[in-house]
Image (spheres, rainbow, N blue to C red):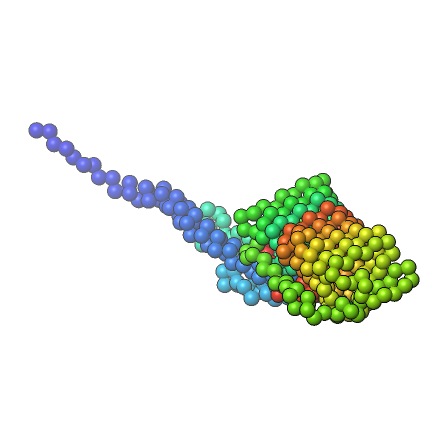
Length: 411
């Protein structure tokens, strides 16, 4: 009978453990230290996000105030139990462009175009973050770096609305200004000239949207043309646009039509042309001295004008075709003129600058001329085929749609 024997090798297990130990420690480093790095990176990202949002919320304040607010907000966050210290040189004030998704640092408070900075970039670093098990692999620490860019956005669309579609195939430029600061111009030019719709947006030609381009959920923004810039957020709305309700029923009965003055060939005749369907030709002029007026339609051709001399509200309960100089607001304050339209179409092909709000939520609005528009536009559909320069009065727009400016992260 042949027996079997088991040869004992006392040092084998110890040798195997010694050989496997670095591998086991490496796996521990992978499991624990990588998780530790991941958590610390997320904490650092939260810190720079908070700093960028806080800095953007201070715009358009001075660069020093913006940076101070960003730095203080970031410092309220911690990475591995240590407060995040972001030096001022790691905080930049500048401009965010949505189409190319690029940030450009500003050299001063106002760029050559007159627009003020609209974004803040914060870079946070955590140097020499100590590791736990990776030391056995010769790695005692790691360096972390995260970046955040926040845009001072107009919130949920503050500017140019085409509720059921926007088509801009002309040379379109939008931006904004704060009428509380003063007139539109260098030092008071902001990038909150948003173009928004509950449905699709088609942008072509040569356009520059100094603001957001926002379409409805499930819809698209189509961009064509050789030159196009969107200085803001480009994407879908989180909630539908709700336009103000327009009704002319009361002003049909009670209005100030009899105070309107007309002037043609040097002759004055109160109210003759300003009754029902108003049609102005050649050198016709109607002066509105302030108040509330009512029309069933409006047609303007040749060199005719409507001159606004006081705070005026104009209801047009029908179609509008302005192929003339246009409506001249003498004060050049958009707050002094509000035009409500309930007709099917509103065509503006005039050449006089328009200062006021056009509220036409059930009307197809066409901008065909080369005038500048100061105020706000609310339309059912908006077709901008001319050389439209639209400057949104942020104060008026916010009062109409109850929307304020908020900072948002873009990167």
